[in-house]
Image 1 (cartoon, rainbow, N blue to C red):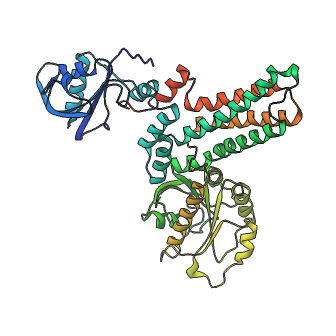
Image 2: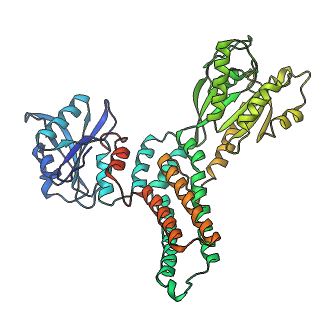
Image 3: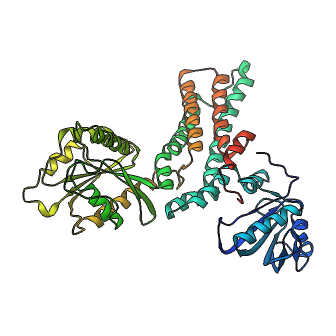
Length: 465
């Protein structure tokens, strides 16, 4: 993909398909002239920036196409920093195709995916992290996901990185000064003071990096695995949560042979519920595949709901398999006890809690037929999601894998700085690690971007954005 400022580009910026209106965006040095070539109404070359005007547009044959509203944004006060015209027409798919064909015939070319946003980045209207946040806002399907993307778009994440780079530049400067005056044996800052500064930088970078697991889950929908032995009521629980008979329910053990996923919205969050096959010892080769997929679902999940019949002890092998995978620091475990209406002889709950290494939340009264405990479980899911949202730095959570990888590399090089200061490594070697840390952080905001990186990022955008 090649971006050329000399080209004037156009595309439909509203979603594909038929709708009330559609908006064609034109950006570039000739945007106003090209729009004017198919426009009938007040001369667009004479109107002020940020004004809208009613008129009509022609198709590529010069025939009247549709009534339209032209909105003019003059450089540099536009999204791309270039002259921009947006033509709003009726949302007929034919009108949209004919309008783009007319603009191309007048001298524009069809924009590549993400090219408008790439031009905004090139014009320094935003940095690379903010540009990527635009794609996240478009894709956001929950308030929490939108909030994370909006925080990044406002520049809060970029501001945090800028502050970290400033501190790193200060650290590098002090080390470079030591090198310049090494023969005079001048110490501009004690190694202990430099180590404290490096420690503080490391903590912030590591905290940002570690927020990715929760941030990405909130952005994509928090995965929730419903696990437990056969016939515990997992499928009934999924159906009760989503309010639909999504999964087959049967008294026969081992009915569920594969994972079933359903999306659930609770408060500000989207959850991806995963109903799994019962975890038990089985000689059935098909059931074994289902059990393996259940264990994989636990590995992928941020929240694990362990559902167990309150009248039956959780089998030791099932408990061990669940505990081995679910008992990691980045997972939250909810113990839910089903069939409370049949609890004539309930099991020892304290013993089960101990076997599972004390779950985060215990719900003792799940009865899907009467919906007892369903609201409690929904509240528990929301409470855990709220806790996950608090794992960022100053309300900033990392949701982008590219950012997380750069922060991980920055944390590693900062660790080498700390080790070097502690072990008396020469200043020039430490300074090299500091510069490497700065480079990793700069990769996130695109201070020194490569064409390959830009092409990879913006090609994921939709055309028209």
